[in-house]
Figure 1 (cartoon, helix red, strand yellow):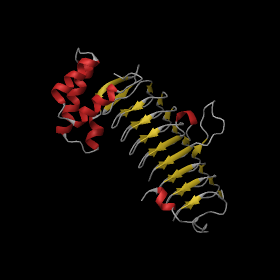
Figure 2 (spheres, one colour):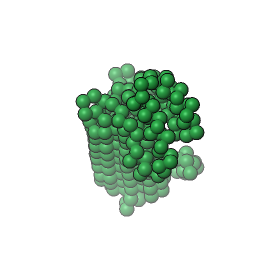
Figure 3 (cartoon, one colour):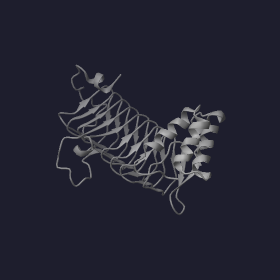
Figure 4 (spheres, rainbow, N blue to C red):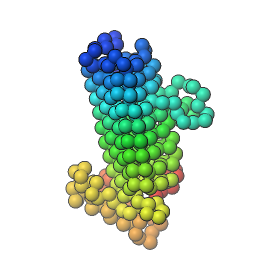
Amino acid sequence: MSLAKQFDGQAQQPLSASEIDPRAVISPSARLACNVKIGAYAVVGDDVELGDDCVLEHHAMVQGPARLGRGNHLYPFCAIGGDPQDLTFAGERTTLEIGDRNDFREFSTVNRGTEKGGGVTRIGSHNLIMVYAHIAHDCIVGDHTIFVNGAALAGHVTVEDFAQVGAYCAVHQFCRIGKYSYIAAHTVVTQDVPPFSKIVAPRSTRCYGVNSIGLTRQGFSPDRIAPIEKAYRLLLRSKLNTTQALEKMRGTLSHSEDVLTLIQFIESAERGLTK
């Protein structure tokens, strides 16, 4: 059921003493679905909608306008839905949209969008945002992603499904992080990260081939991984330039939907590609 349907025709739920700590601060304009639990000194701001089974631990804060789906868990001292950190922001009405069953760990932060960036920050479902991680204004995050402690997205970043951003990574604004990619700790990302890749920065940020361990953990078979690895050998280890490598992939590996996804991602890169 969508979040909109959860609230259709429903009045705000009464604040049960067993579910809502009396020391919590809840705006009269907030809308709470069923079985929402809110701890001491948590803050639910104006125009916030919380779906069924959401949990706000003590001192957690969510500001609006923001819509959270089912089963989201906000841990102590996280700050979700704050104003964008953008000097051009002048109080315009912008929003945050969050799907289902995300965990926002202690001191993590997520900002609403900006008018110039489309007015909305979106986060999908089943994501883990760890301690001190930051998702800035106008970012688009898919499903099943992981942001390890201290990982930070600048504004307008897109992170696709099943990507993992390592501890203390910094991602430049307008970059894209492809699906099933893995970015190792302390990496600075200034160009698009291709899907299925493994990005490490011992000295400079480079792609070190396929995230084969991560793909195996997500249920990819060896037969499915093999053409992805062949595509990356063409991209990274052959003497072909990027255009020639893509032509070779089309000619020899077009039977793989994953390789076609990789080709499409590379061809649409606007900030260049991490190689």
